[in-house]
Length: 142
Image (tube, rainbow, N blue to C red; front, side, top):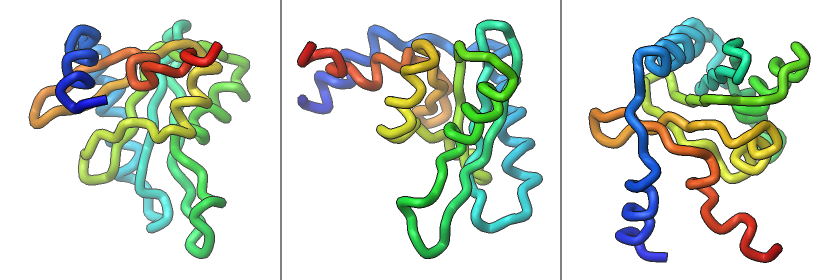
């Protein structure tokens, strides 16, 4: 798939980020900035369809990267502990403010909890796109 096609495909699905969405970004930034450990460098924040907020940070294993846990997984654990199961919006970011797209493993895990919007950033513009647009051919072999 060419980059041009992919951008065209995503461009039709992009939505602007509103004030409530920016609040989620701010909450994630506050969380990661207060982290003292050098092995937690990413924060994820979720808003569910019930308008509850859930948060997580990544936990890196210094000697074995595959044993590390993404911030999204941490937030999913908190969400499930509160018996909530439908994510409406997600954002993940680094301490320097860089917005991150969920990795492939997190995208697949998040699919179990709905088709949330994912906040992304291109240059200085925030936008959101549905998770299934980040995994466009997931159902191809069914």
